[in-house]
Image (tube, rainbow, N blue to C red; front, side, top):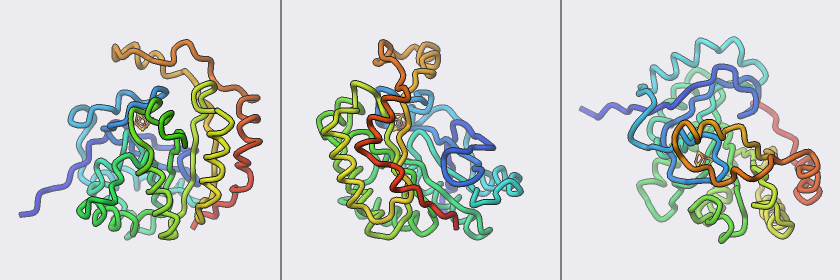
Length: 255
Ligand code: SF4
C-alpha cells in the first residue's frame, strides 16, 4: 500500500490578504533550512517537530469552508517555513484544489530547488502543473551577502526564478528590505537587472523589514542577530524603489 502523504503544518490563516491575489487561506508549513537574519517565523524552522499533521484531503476541506470569500481570484496559499521541503503534500493539496477550480499560490524561498536532482525535478514539474502563482523571495542578489544574510547560497534560487520564467509560470518577486544589510545600491541594481530578465513577473514587491518578531525570538531563546537595527521606513523604501521600479510590474490578473 502506498505510504500516506502527511503535511506538517505550523499554523494557518483564514483571511490572508497579502500572500497572493484576493482573500487567501494560508497554510504555513513547518520546516526551513535557511536562517535568514530577519526571519519573521523562527517557530517554523524545525523540520521534524512541531505543527500539526494533515492529509492533503483534510487540509483542503479545512480551507474550502472559506470558498465564499475567494472571489476576485482568491484561494489557497502555501507558505512557511519552506513549503518545497514538503513538496509531495503541497502537490497533492493543489491537485485537489485544481479539481475544484481553486486558485493556488506557493510562497517559497526556493532553497530546496535542485536542478541536478532528477527525483526532485520530477516532483517539481508535477507541482508546476497545479500551481497558479509563485511568490518568490529574492533576499540578496550578491552571493556573498546572501550567504551572510541567510547562511545559504543563492545560485539555485536565481536558477529557479529563471526556470519558472522559462516555463511560463506567473511570479511575484518579493524583496525584504533591510536597511544597511541588503539595500546596497549596486545590489539593488543587480536585483533590478535580474528581475528584468524574467518574462513572467506579474508583481515585484518591496517588503520593509520590521522588528515585531523580536518577542518570538525571546520566547524561543534564540539570539536575534538584528536586534540593534531599526525597521525600514518610508524613505528607505522610496530610495530602494527608485532603483527597483516595482510599479512597472503591477499587472497581475487573477485567473
Ligand atoms: S526562508 Fe523564510 S522561513 Fe526560512 S529562515 Fe528565511 S525568512 Fe525564515
